[in-house]
Amino acid sequence: MVIEMSIIHCDMDAFYASVEQRDNPALRGKPVAVGGSVRQRGVISAASYEARRYGVRSAMPTFKALQLCPELVLLPVNHAKYEKVSRQIMRIFRHYTPLVEPLSLDEAFLDVRGSEGLFGPAEVIGREIQRRIREELGLTVSVGIGPNKFLAKLASGHRKPCGFTVIPADRAVEFISPLPVSKLWGTGARTAERLYKMGVQTIGDLRRFSLPTLEQQFGKYGLVLYQLARGIDDRPVEPARAAKSIGKEVTFATDVYSFDELHCILRELAEKVGRRLRKHGLKCGSVTLKVKYPDFRLVTRSKTLREPTDLTSVIYRAAEELLRRHCVPPVRLLGLTCGKLTDVDQPALFPDEKAIKEARVTKALDALKDKYGEDVVRIGRLLRPKNEDG
Image 1 (tube, rainbow, N blue to C red):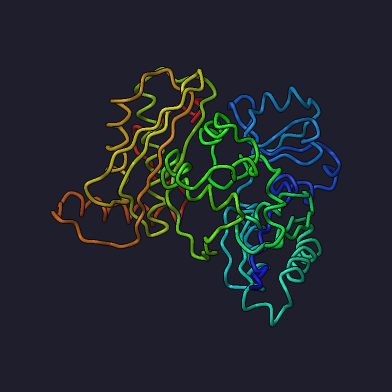
Image 2: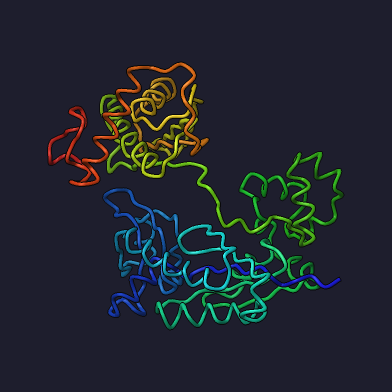
């Protein structure tokens, strides 16, 4: 049986930093990073390949990146710019197939079965995508091709930047065997640590274990490990991936000791998250509070709501309860995430006249903000002196 090489994974090279270097030729060839400032305890969102030679990596604290590379050019994150370029990239992808599954602004899976009669085999389509992104957008992309998503994603990361790798089904086991077990999809630090304790360092090592043994050790994920170690992945490319959560967090320039200030910041986060929910026509069924302490200890706590909501006050009350019960200042980072999202507008089981009125007022306020900006109306308790960091 011939297995089609129909899945392409495209991953832009150092996306944010490359966009900045493209738009400012003076930055080309220099170590560039995009991220938050040291004063705001920022982290690196993306680093150019010149910066990576110094050890600068995404998710690294900015202060550490500057220690490794004192001449690093640090730029603020410009989401609007990157989103615009991402839309251009995705339009190129969708020229070749409607089956495009974005994973983020800068990477996506493409299923080109059914498109090959028009554009040629997957290898030809992959080369065309590279050419168009280079010529039309002035950027580079690494392309991986395989019979499934797991192998295609491994392939795209094999020879960055501007890599092009094909993993045929009959060479999959040979290709993946020497790779570290951490390369397996879904294998986080804890799972990897458990595998190391079992003597598993590489994907090839993992194949020594039977399916029953892996299921005994890892439950349902044992089957996933067993299959991936053999290059098997049945996940389809899903072009309409729905958002699983919407959230917002803030890292403070200095640790926050005051509960009153934390409440105020939490209300502001609830405002922003609630507004995003309403913009997308979504409601949430759960609220999660995220707290990071000065020693980097991270605590997350969640609360399930009685009914899905997009109202800021309901989201805030749930988060505020979690804050009171589970937070002990000082705090380094505070975050709020709404999960269990739905776009089904079900009527409340017990209609609340107060909630109905609040929904009407919220809709009117959203319309004002759409027309005149986010700060046209603000809750009194959120107003702080101009010289305070907000």
